[in-house]
Length: 603
View 1 (cartoon, rainbow, N blue to C red):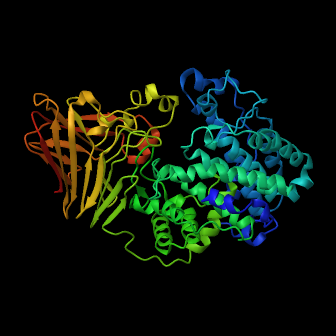
View 2 (view 1 turned 45 degrees about the vertical axis):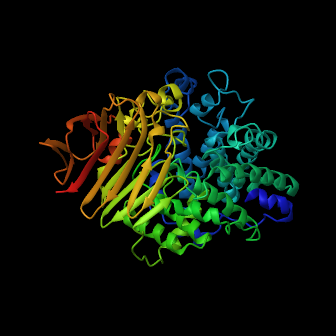
View 3 (view 1 turned 30 degrees about the vertical axis):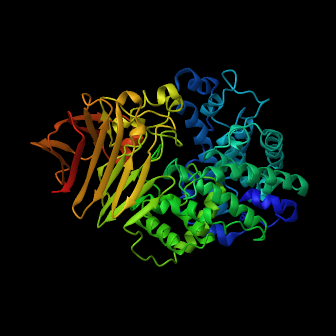
């Protein structure tokens, strides 16, 4: 899409002078900004002391894989800075300008704007970063967006209060961001070394675009930057399958597909609508991905390093994306999902948000407030054939299943796995992921030290005691949806020592539950042991030949030995996700079998 444009045009043909963002002088926008708590919160924090990231905090990731000790003060600084800015924009009395200036100065004084985890992941030398090499990671780019937006929105009051801070920010942006970006082509997220890129690419580029659009006054230099960004974001666009699916899951769509939207929307807005790329059909499918992996309310199918709940906050941006791509049903979906949780959503909060996104979301919320929601939101079947994810819906029941391969973005070894919900009740689950540490990002520990990435903790079989392995060749050979059933063949997901030649799973959703049947062909007829694993966060008890989940559902299989193991989460994120302290791993053991059928029914 972007390369096609560059083959026929150049950014220099367009003027990017249209102001996209309401400055503090736009009182109608900011007095009606839908956050009624930011002034009181900022007032309560007026004596905030800006914390320092110590050298030993930064070193902790390399020493013991602890990233949070560095990230807590780092993000606390930025969250407070955005809070003070929102309060000043809304109140417009100058009360928060001293703390805004303190925050800008504190950030400018940081040696490095990125994270310790990202510094070490790209194998930078030494224990702490050097200012001489300002590598651009996700949060260096996002920090740059924070600073450039603050100086743009509050330019006049900051110039009156402390004009030197504007000059300091401009100096740091040029040194840390603009010059490195224009001179480097070797950052891995750019896609020039490795063509397959992930959410880093659009996430970073959407922020860098804001920086250049708001600060670069030389047309040729701005055109050069935009042309380079087009070439690089094309790599991300090419990495997305034709069906628009996000292999990193719904969580990361908020930083992948949504960031792609923000990039394209800025180009359109800054050009006064002259450069509009939203007619691209694949772009429409990238937006629609979220509807296909939806379960109910703000619950989504949580493949990869995803969390099942908490996506309502993404809906304003999805609504804007749907409007730009002229998808009325998708806009209706976004409005409906947001409505289910809007009372619990912090209204355009300062926490881990960029000012650009907050402004885009505020505009979308105004439109959403007038939207008349219609139902239903889904058909009986939804299917992503390239990504190999499908959903079956029947009444309140929703069954999602996946094929794919075991080297997807933020991969779990989960080819052939599924989840089952009854309304918003999780019957059989994908646990998701616990709080990140360095162990999550090292190949030698990701599938050993982290239990939730392994196939033995998904709704999958262990074959002759062997679980799936991580590699692209460990994949589904076939994935299909027909007549209300999902069929996936995935013997290749297991290594040779599993001793299985053929494994076909057929999942069927009925009025009162689901059943699935796994059919095996083994290499050695003497080695045909299978353990079918199911994961449940509902209370579990065994009653004869049945497993009872939450006193509402029964799980049965013939000729199986049943055992259960309770695994405590010991992680705040997982406990919040599931409103539970742990998960029960249910095992159905079989000997000398070629076909296994398991039924899950409402009692």
